[in-house]
Image 1: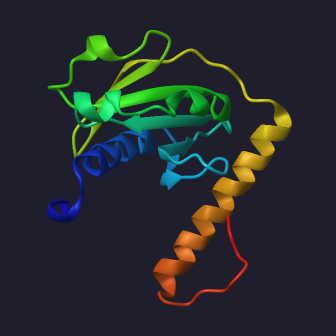
Image 2 (image 1 turned 180 degrees about the vertical axis):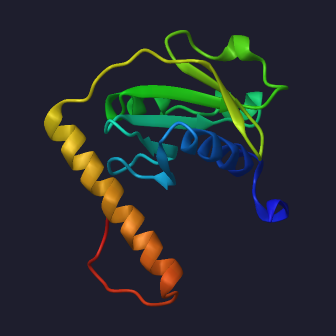
Length: 150
């Protein structure tokens, strides 16, 4: 399975496995708003929403120009990197998760900035619809309905 996944996807898998142990459910490649796509969106047991961006190399990190735009779409923001990543590159005021393809460890919690109620509701509904659409796709591959989106 891991042979067909990119390095960032392997990190995301380890992050998702780890967050599950903390009571979070996750969706990878989630679109919180048009024009934005986050690597991992996590929904916690108290309706908290976390975004995790997975960076497999220095070049991958330095090429990311959109991450500031993700901050307003989560209660906490994290970078997930592997053990060889130079941690000093990661900005202060963000969380850090050390990950591999099989698990992860939260090294630093990013500061909590609670979402406004209306945004939380809309984002949680989008998360639920996307999860449902993906589940239906696994259950009945190849069936699509035009006009349906998360």
